Amino acid sequence: MLYTIIGVILALAVSIPATFVMTSNYRKKQMDLKIGNAEEKARAIIDEALTVAEAKKREALLEVKEESIKTRNDLEKEIRDRRNEVQRNERRVQQKEEAIDRKTDALERKEQSLSSKEESLRKQKEEVTRLTAERIQELERISGLTSEQAKEYLLKTLEEDVRHDSAVMIKEIEAQAKEEADKKAREYVIGAIQRCAAEHVAESTISVVQLPSDDMKGRIIGREGRNIRTLETMTGVDLIIDDTPEAVVISGFDPVRREVARIALEKLIVDGRIHPARIEEMVEKAQKEVDAKIKEEGEAATLEVGVHGIHPELVRLLGRMRYRTSYGQNVLKHSIEVALLSGILAGELGLDVRMAKRAGLLHDIGKAVDHDMEGSHVQLGAELCRKYKESPIVINAVESHHGDVEPTNLISCIVQAADTISAARPGARRETLETYTTRLNQLEEITNSFKGVSNSYAIQAGREVRVMVVPEQITDADMVLLARDISKKIEGEMEYPGQIKVSVIRESRVTDYAK
Image (cartoon, helix red, strand yellow):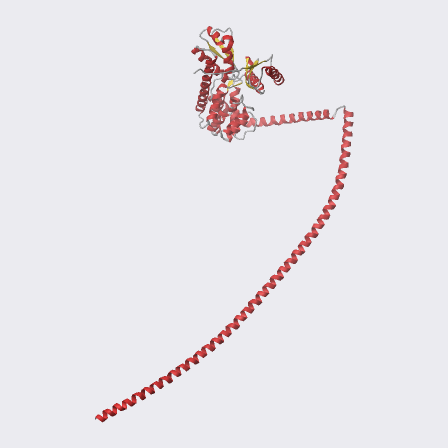
């Protein structure tokens, strides 16, 4: 048994190494076989990759060649196109140069032709001038008239023909217009006049101040007339102290100055202290009072008419018109009446009543400043309305109410008609007053135009003008020459009855205060 076990053990000891050796050899053979297969696969993959790479390389080379051939073909085509375009441009330039050359030749030929024609025309013109002069001389010899006389006769004949034709045409147009509109217009105008009743009193250029006694006249005159002279100088009016009991007459064409003088004189009479310094103080107070009253009158006019939103300066100018007259008619009352008439007519025609009233109230606003500024009251009024931003309708109404420009709207036509209605009423205006005030205004304008004149006042109903000069600019010797120059200019530019006295006043005044 023991030997058996030993034998088994020995057998196992011998078989195990042999088995291990055999197993190792088998595994080695299997490994060598796998490695060989892997190498063959690797070589096959490499060969295939090389084959594919070679094919890709050939394809890429083919694509590059094709792209380069295509690019070269495109470049050659572009070069051919550009070459063709350059050739076409060269041909066009050549054609243009040829055309310019032809035109230049034609212009040169035309210039030569024109030069010859100009020379021919010059000769013909000289011939025509000569023949015309000969013909005129012959006509003058035959007719016995000079060319100027013949021209005057022809123009006169044409003027008469044109006037006749114009008169016939105007008559036909007026007749046709009257047939169509006379009845309706008459109804509107009559209705407006009936609904607007206004009083008319022709205003004069004098004011009368009642005195408590005739003794007051001496105090007003003062010692050697210094009080009355100071009052007249400060206010620019003329005080008439005659035999009228207990009354002094203030004469002056400017109503504002006359009102200032009246108020100042009344205050002096009440105060009792009448001397130059007190007179100056009272005139200054009267001026402020009149300014306040002017503002009140303007505001009252806008309230009476019912027009709002007017610029304060225009309202002040409306109040100033309270002291302005036109042909004896108070301009503010006239403007209020025109505004009311315009509103009524606008209502009848279905137009803007407020705008019509506004235009009617402001149509004569230029008369508030026409004594102080150059130009007609129409031009001045239009400028004032533009300055204070009035509407184009109002401006056109101001410009056209005397026919200076054409009306551009119906409201302007209404204002024109209302102005005529107000002015044409019996007793509304008086021609002589306007002529008189215009002459006095012109007299003051002439004297104020001289250098060194500070103020001038037309008094004594225009029979005298007092000229206040600046002492520093006008000497006593210059006063004589100035008076003579003013007289000569008045004689040359004005027409007036009788004679006008020119009084030049040079006054030096020194003021000091005792403290």
